[in-house]
Length: 134
View (cartoon, rainbow, N blue to C red):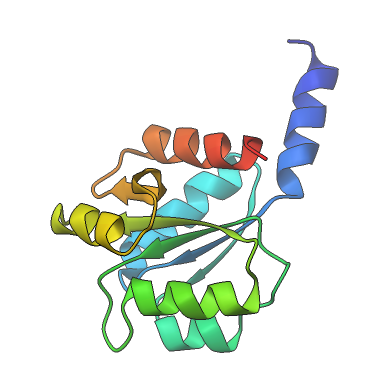
């Protein structure tokens, strides 16, 4: 790959905006640094209510959303975000296997789930995969 191709890829990614919502500040900080290093623009929230209050429809290309959070779980937040922007891509993030069953039961697609802990290279791979599809 020549430098022109690398530059175009980086410029393309810089236009991609990602929102990370998780109640663990250490995790959101780590994800933000890794995703920005990979060329994405990233916003993070550790409080679901704040993320919803500040959400801008049609602004983000992808949302990475924790399921287990205080006050509002990821499924409720997902429904609110979908009302505001029905086309935004969302990846759920959880440490619990039981959420796979909930995803299936509620009609969510299983491939929308990232399992914690996820290595950074795995996160980047999943994000790039989701953003390259339609």
